[in-house]
Image 1: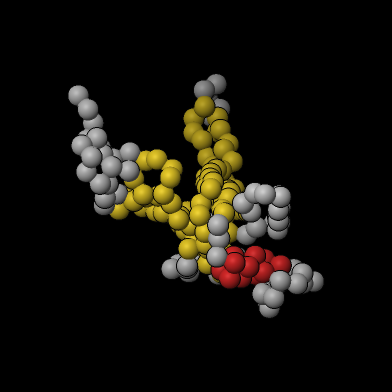
Image 2 (image 1 turned 90 degrees about the vertical axis):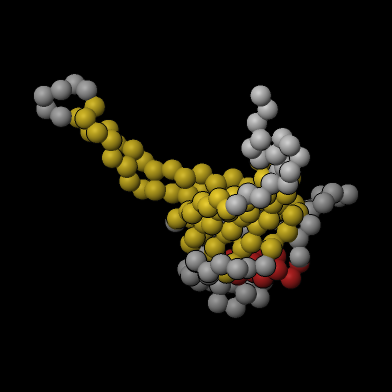
Length: 164
């Protein structure tokens, strides 16, 4: 029996980057090539005096790793985002001698494909990562190739929502 559920296929997605830790509603950055969000925490097993078996597990030091790759981007939006990393107080593109770290809000939207009956999907997976910082500013240009930017950062919190 064929399933009638929609399925996810990574060919239609958007990503928005907003300067500021938690604000949303930023314009779309570009065509998404790669997105990876990894939520992790350090885990510590706890043992009791009267048993050799693990009694509980506690976690600490939560992290939200964010990796984004984008192409065919709007240069105005993109340079504003990247310039904010280099010069948080002026956003002019010049490297600034400051220990101020610019935080960003990263939002992504994945559109689910049509279901087995051919009906268009109505579901979207929305991910929002708040308070993201990027420790480096990569820029690579190859002859005869689309320019692709790969960014790796770390966020504080993540929210996933599925809308119908």
